[in-house]
Length: 262
Image (cartoon, rainbow, N blue to C red; front, side, top):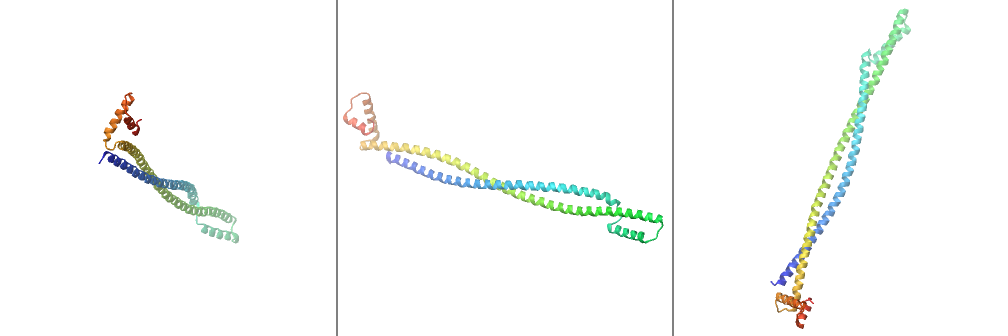
């Protein structure tokens, strides 16, 4: 293989390498575009999930605040019942029946004044007991209602908590996908930077071989039957003599002109 053939092969090899690197770079850029789309989509989904998490947290807190409020009401009723129940002499129905019988006896019976006073006093006591019994009945009804409400609130809070945990996992999943894509883009950008450097070096080297090849072709075209190095050396001597003011022949001057040195 001649020197010119070697230069041409090296130049062409480098040009092919530049083309291959360019194709690889193009593919990497497309991969980065696809990853950026994934990042945008997962960022939007993550942010949406985070907003839902925030909303569910607020609802769960509101449920627990309501639970606290209802529990205070329950405690208040229990405290009232503890004191009222102790003083009630019997059930509401029994007291009503006893009052009815006593009142009928008082209205229809014949009694002494002392007995009637005792009966009136007894009627007043039973009526007070009935009022207390009504209070107990109302408070017990309220207690049942509040306990039912507490159960509903706890169920509601648990539902919010379950949804919250689900959305939090979704947010984490989208965030992990987003961060993974960012890391992949960073790696691809590093590879693209390396390709850019490799392409620049290859193009510079190919240009160097191309110039050497063109120079060799110029010398060969001037004196194809002579050794290129000899022609080049002879041209440099003629040029040096010419610059030094020494006499050069027309043939030598013509050689310099053909080589682009004059």
